[in-house]
Amino acid sequence: MYYGMLEQFLEDLTMKTKLIKRMVILSLSMLAIGAVGSIVTYPMAHKKVTVDLNKTVDATSVKQVSVKGTSMDITLADSPDNKIHVSVNGETQSADKFDIKTKQNGDTLEVTFDEPKLIEMNFVLFFNYNNRSATVSLPKSVKQATVKTNFGEIYTNNFVGESLELKTDAGDINLSGLKLTDLNAKTNAGSISLSQ
Image 1 (cartoon, rainbow, N blue to C red):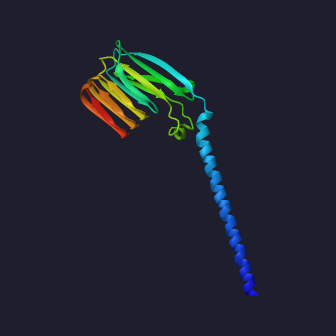
Image 2 (image 1 turned 60 degrees about the horizontal axis):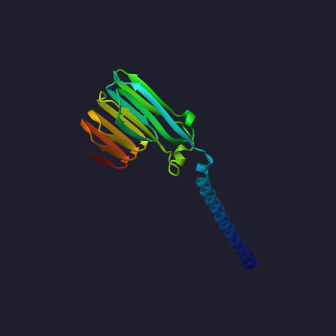
Image 3 (image 1 turned 90 degrees about the vertical axis):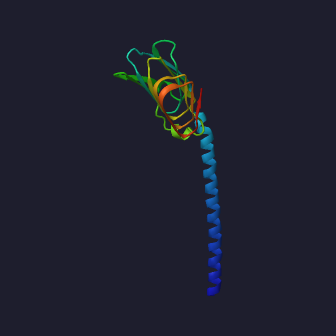
């Protein structure tokens, strides 16, 4: 009698265990399908708009420039005149919230790219990189420059001055035609190339 009850109990337990295993496998499969679907469709749900901003600053008293960006490539170039020209081109989810901010403290000009703080920015970054680039054109009177960006490449061509400091957390740094006394270039995930 007890043997039959024990046998029945073990049989019920085995069927319940199989049922639980099936439910767990089904739940994990549904979760995986949902995650893949979200990753694929989420970036497509946000329409991108074109950004085309320009700003010009008088450089008469500017000797140093500090440029800070979050998620974009930044290029230092030669200015065609004695002014500092800043331009941003590319795509973003929210062009109306994007701005170029400049602030002068003595002989130092700070250029900051005010980018929208989007919830999906960190998540989408790996799958749908925001394609934006900034160009900062400097006159020969600017002798020191600092460029920092979190996610993006940094390019400099023919910078002539005293010092140049470049830093990116994730991106390459490409330098060419430099004539300066002090160079400090750092990337946490990328390469640094220097050419004449």
